[in-house]
Amino acid sequence: MRPASLLPCVLAAALLAAPAAASAGVPHTVAPGETLWSLAAAQNMTTRAFAAANGLSEDAHLVAGTTIRIPTVSEAAAALASAPAAVAQAAGQASATPQPAPPPMGGYTVRPGDTLSGLAAQAGVTVDAIAAMNGLDPDGFLIAGTVIKLPTGAPTPPAASAPAPEPVVPPAAPSPSPTRVTAADIATVAARNGVPADLSAAIAWQESGFNNAMVSSANARGVMQVMPGTWDWVQANLARRRLDPGSAIDNVGAGVLYLGHLLQQTGGDHAMAAAAYYQGLSSVRRIGMLPETQRYVANVMALRSRFGG
Image 1 (tube, helix red, strand yellow):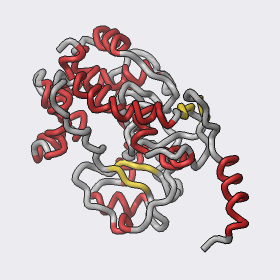
Image 2 (image 1 turned 180 degrees about the vertical axis):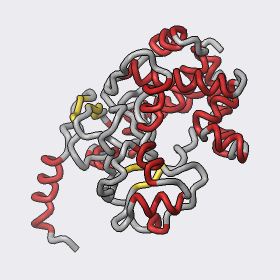
Image 3 (image 1 turned 120 degrees about the vertical axis):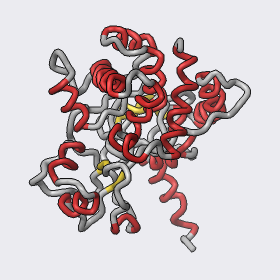
């Protein structure tokens, strides 16, 4: 048991270390090592409520240097209480609770002892392929804590049972930024590229809630949750100008261009294109929609009604 005489000092230190609470939410610049959990705990609130107040999912990784909002306890509670209703309204299902968004596929946090060559061999792909998808140097050192995406259906690495280190987001394009877009912004980009605005907005909402600061546990980034490898492929094959990796609008542009490509590949089938956006086109064609993909597609198709579909 901790001696009673130490409690005032401990409490004072905890208060000094915590972001300042206020009667209204305040902006906070994320420091290295801070997580949704640590910030929420410092404010005596749950991670889910803290994330809801910022329009983030519970498994979102915070990027050092970006700005997040520190809500009051009452604001976080209100955001959490309104979240199911807001999502239901967005899905055109005001009287029903929609399914939660499935987690991203293939997310893995590198453990000590992991190597890129070892992870690639276990996944059955080349080192260059897994490095390109995650924006990594195939010849570089793999740092413990690095958040990466493994191929869909790859076996779980043996080290996954070990505790995960603090997540590290590898520096690669696109870059997360503390910016939000609107449905109108997405509709403008979609119309410019001949892609259905309602489908584009539904996927963007499902992926990030229109939040460009979002980084998933599978290393996808920004409003449209674009992987570094997808960003590079879109830039090389679909984009008609140089895309700005830090721009929320250009993140939308990359995602919309990729969605348009998937629509072409699937004969204009919106559900198949959405499935391919989440699971990967080759995987969907090879093994069909996985159960979590079916959930994802159902949510996206329902959300389209909010955005004019």
